[in-house]
Amino acid sequence: MSEESKLREQICLLAKSMFDRGLTGGSTGNISARTPDGGLLVSPTGTSFGRLDPGRLSRFDAHGTLIGGDKPTKEMPLHAAFYDTRSTAGAVVHLHSCHSVALSMMPDVDADNFLPPLTPYAIMKLGKVKLLPFFLPGDPAMGEAVRGLAGKRSAVMLANHGPVVAGKDVEAACNAIEELEDTARLAMMTRGMSPRALTETQIQALVTKFDVEWDV
Image (cartoon, rainbow, N blue to C red; front, side):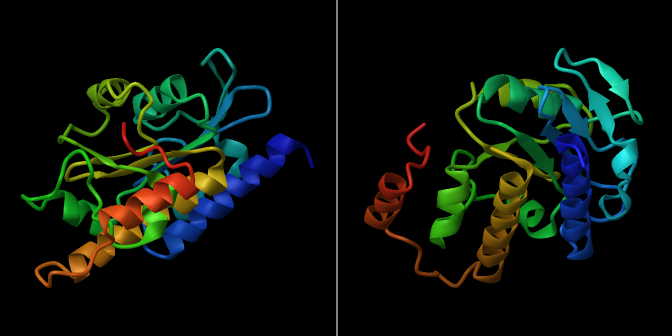
């Protein structure tokens, strides 16, 4: 099996795993990954994460031209913005995960640091998550908002919509976005209970030990 064939299978396997566990439902969410030749494989528009077909993934060449597969997701500007601004991006995932969306609706969240520091893992895998304003689905302005961050964030939260995460490869991106949703779930579960969060000293120790992009 070629490297691209393995990547196609991996994308579909990971997407189905997230769908089966309720991290995105119906035909929501989209996923993309760099191919060995510098192109992209992208989930097609209107498809379900639970039923992606490896042979029908949208295939772009290294110049961004669609050369095979079905029509890609309408959120391509989001994906392109991460690839164009983050040299380390090997994959991008976008979900409509319920707890992160719920947290994005709360009036007192910090737009510059969306997730509260409840566990070390979100800090290690995501750094600071930027909360972006609401955009209509498919609006190219979402991509422009990501470009405006100049590659300084690996993850953003689209208000009232869902998270978007870039990782070094598709497995890393999926692991990170799941950590984002888990942390948002903890935040909603403990909301109003004054949970004991990590201290600033503990956060800085994590940032130093795991070389986290934090003060950006």
